[in-house]
Amino acid sequence: MKTRQFTEDQIIKLLQDGKKGEKPIEDLCRDFGCSTASYYAWKKKYGDTNVDEAKRLRRLEKENARLLRIVGQQRLEIDAMTEVIGKKR
Image (cartoon, rainbow, N blue to C red; front, side, top):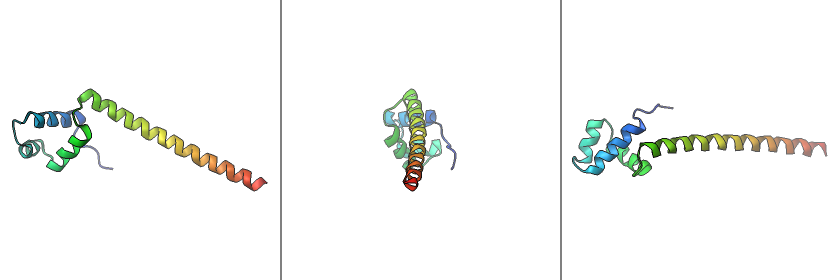
């Protein structure tokens, strides 16, 4: 998987600059080195968040992924156990 080129801090700063309206979005993106599509995707994802909220969001997403892996692993173990029990009968 490709690593991130921009940090959350940089993205939020770009979004805040875009919200100020001093420069057109296209010029901001050109100066920042990203596409306008990326800008609008980030705007949809981060919206009006600040840096602390974005870091919290990232931690929650990691925790959610970890918990989903654990639940999936337990589900596989349960299925294997029920299969073994079914064969014994």
